[in-house]
Length: 413
Image (cartoon, rainbow, N blue to C red; front, side, top):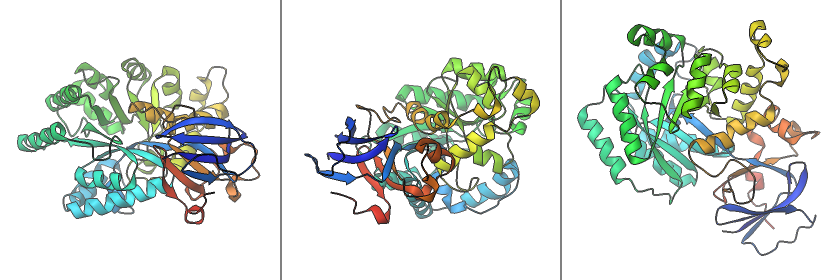
C-alpha cells in the first residue's frame, strides 16, 4: 500500500512523507495544501508530529496476566515463590490471552516491535501476526528442560516458516546464568549461531546474581559468559545493572547490546543502571519494559522518561567522574529516544528506527493538541519528558497503520 502523511511535523518543519512498499520513499517540505497526490491512502497529519516507533528490546509479553500480582518484593523471592508457581498453571489459552493484551497495549503506545522471552510461543506468534507488528520470539532455555524438550524446540526452529511474511524472527533465549548451566549456555550459543539467530539473556540484574557467580565461578557474570565464548554481536543482554567498567568494555568490544529496563529495575530494587560507564564504553544500549508483572506496563515512552531522569540521579563521586559534562546533560532526550528506537532496531538487524528516506516505515504520529505537547517549544523534548501513551494517534509498522486512536480512525483525505 502507498501512503502519504500530509503536513506532518518533523524536525521542526512541516513535511509531506510518502511511503511505498513498507519504506519511506520521499520526505519533502509540505506545500501546505491538503490535496492528495497519487497514493492509496492519505492521512491529514497537520495536527501531528512524527517520530520513529518504539522497539521494545526486552519483555515477557504474556506476563500481562500477572500485572499487579506479587508486587513489592525482591527478585528471587518474587520469581521462586510467586511467579514461577503461577506460570506452571498457565494454559495455551492463557498465553494467547496474555499475548493479545500485551500486543494491544504496545501498539496503542507506539511500539512496532518487541523482543520476547516466554513460553507458549505459538500463541504469541499468532497475536503478533494478527496485530501486524514485528517481534523477535525467544525459544526459552532452562536447565530444568529435558533433552526431549530441547529436541522439540530444535525441531520447531528447523521447521519454522514466518507466517507474517517477514516481520517475525526467532532467538535462542537462555534465561540467565543462574537458571542455565555452563554446557547448556554453550550449546545455546552454538545452536543460535548455527541457525543465524540472536541470543537473548538476562545478565547482571541483581547484586545477588553477581555474588553467586563469584562464588561458583570465581568471576562476575559478564566475564563468565565471555570466558565460555557466549558473548558476541548477536547477544541481547537484558538489565546489565551490576556491570563494572572493565565489563562494559568487554560488552562494547564483543558488540553486545545491553537492554536497559529502568522501571523494572527500580520496582524490583535491582539497582541503578551505570549510565556513565555504559556511555563511556561506547557499548550498544537499547531500552525495554521487561514484563508487566515487574513494571507494571509496556509503555516505552514512560521508559524513556525514567531512563533520562534516573541517569541524572548520580552520587557525588559519580558526578565528579563526568569529564566536562554537567549532570543534567547526561542522557539527553535525543539520545534516550535513539536507545528506544534506532538502537533497538539495529540490535535485531532491522533497517529501521529512523525517519529517513529508504528506511522501513515504522513510526508513530503524536497528537500535538494534547495539553502535554503544548505550548510546543520542542516536540522531541515533549515526547520524551511530558507526553503519555494516550497521545499516540497512529502507530505504523512496515508502512501499515496498525493502530489508530478512535478519534483519529477516520483521519484520511
